[in-house]
Every structure is written in structure tokens, then in C-alpha cells.
Amino acid sequence: SNVTIPPRDEVYKYKENIKSMTNEELNDPATIPGFFTLIHSPPRDRTSTPRNALVGRVVSDKMDKTVNVEVDRYKIIPKYRKRMKYSKKFMAHDEEEVCKEGDLVMIVPCQRLSKKKHFRVYELVRQKGVL
Image (cartoon, rainbow, N blue to C red):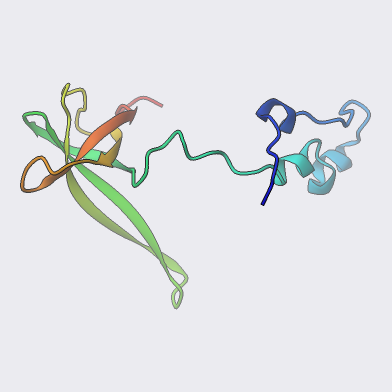
């Protein structure tokens, strides 16, 4: 498949004149400026996030250079049309000890460092209390 991906700045440009449009036209999804190009733009590349990366919340940072990260997953139960929360805790290596309890972090798999530790902290997504 020979698909050409337009540059990002061209995808988000639109040719419609907003000032001449009525409120009804702006409220209709089919006539929103740039709607067609945004809906049909290709997905973003996955080069920014590493493979098998998980995002979770730090539940314990009491160990040396190790944090306990809880990763939540949700599974929809078709019979009840509800989602159930499944959580699993992973030990992750934090070399600089920058993670504190309650922080949102991204962890990636690495070579096994100990019996239970085979992840490392890739980045601190959001600190606790910061929007």
C-alpha cells in the first residue's frame, strides 16, 4: 500500500470561511470547518511511545531505586454492559528516585533486574497534585 501522509500542519488547515457561516452550520458535524480532513487524517505515529509501555500510578516509593506501580485495565462485560476494573502491580526501577507516591508514570519492560523487578520508569507523565 503506497499511502502518502500529508504533513501535520497541512492536515489541520481548512478552507472554509468561518465568519460567513451561520450557527446552524457550525453546530452541524458535517459542516464543521476542517471536520472532513480531521476525521480522515491518518493516526499519529507510535514512535513517541515505546513498545509494551504501561501507564500507572505509583503506590509505593519506600524502596531504594524501586517504585511499586499499579496499572489499571478495564474490561467491558457484555452481559451487564458495564466495565470492570482490573489492576496489577509492577515493581519498576527508578534510578534517579524522582517518582513519589501518587505520580502517574510510564513504565517499559527491560532486562530482569531482580526476582520481581523487570520494568523501568520511562517517564514521569504527571506529578501528584499537578494538572
